Image 1 (cartoon, helix red, strand yellow):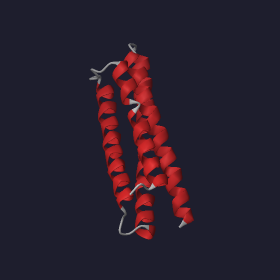
Image 2 (cartoon, one colour):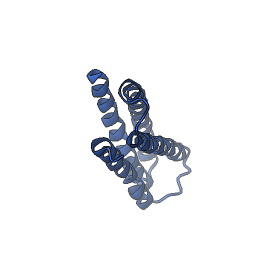
Image 3 (spheres, helix red, strand yellow):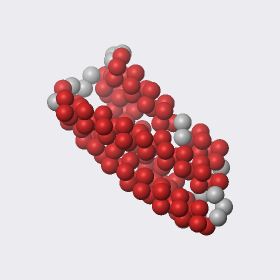
Image 4 (cartoon, rainbow, N blue to C red):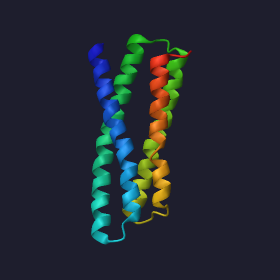
Amino acid sequence: MLWIKALHIFFVVSWFAGLFYLPRLFVYHASTTDRPGHERFVIMERRLFMMMSIGCIGSVVFGLTLMFGWWWPAPLWLQAKLGAVALLILYHMACYGLMRDFRAGLNRRSPRFYRLFNEVPALFLLAVLLLVELKPY
C-alpha cells in the first residue's frame, strides 16, 4: 500500500504543478497582442493541460485505491477531502474552458482576473493538507 501512497503523492504533485502554472500562462497570454505570441501560448497551454490531466487521473485512481484499501467506509475528514477534490476537478475543467477560449481568440478577461484565478488551487491545497494531516473529524 505504501507504493500506492507514493504514486498518489507523485500524481498530486504533478497535477498541482499544472494547476499552478496553467493560470499563470493565462496571465501572460491575456497580455499578448502579437500572433506568434498567441500561437506559442496556445501550444504551451495545450501541452501543459495534457500533462496536468495525467496528474489528475493518476491522483484520482491512486487516491480511490487508497481509500478503498485503507479507509472504508470513509471517515468524515476524507469525505470533506473528496469534496475539495471534486471542486478541484471542476477548477481543472474551468481551465480547459478558458484554454479553449484563448485558442479560439475569445478571451474577454483581464490579466488581473487570471492572477486571482491562479490563487484558487493554493487555497484548495491548504484545505486538503489540513484535512489529511489533522483529521479534524
